Length: 218
Image (tube, rainbow, N blue to C red; front, side, top):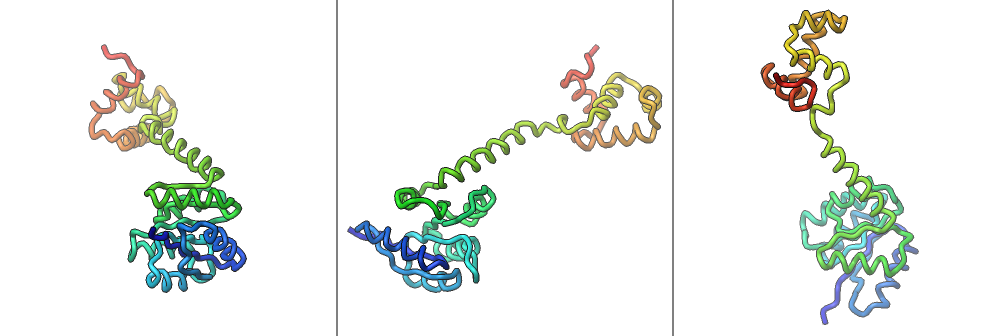
């Protein structure tokens, strides 16, 4: 049975030794190399050609994010498991954008690390549970923003009032008198409405006002 070749890149020798010892307990894995920095890792990885790289996200000469990008430019088939002490979603997102397949916290146990490796070898993504919750919340927030991206929702209360009066057929002068503002201000609001709602003519504004229930069609 062909062994899965693993490479470890981390600037902490104790952690590297610990990871090596973990993989040594499993006969299906073989640690083919290790490095204490991103630059050294790049040189060695292109020579030993591992299947999986356990990459520290923070290294002094070349960080794990940049090292991952460079590795995958030359060897896109390599699976990168990013090791990190950062639980925030921003570091995790940066890692995945760079091409890492997994994001594992450094305080994770051996079972979680092996789970991550097995997932990436199967072509799947993985993140430590503490990070997954943050990623999920971030994803939900993004969906909510997309769902509420209706340009109408970006209008201020004053802009909606101006839109309602315009749709009611009032002239700029009449709107100005009703709201106790200048005609120039009304025209500015109208221009902003057309820009925000992507309308090139008044008829478009009136249709939106009717659709949103600001006015009732006669």
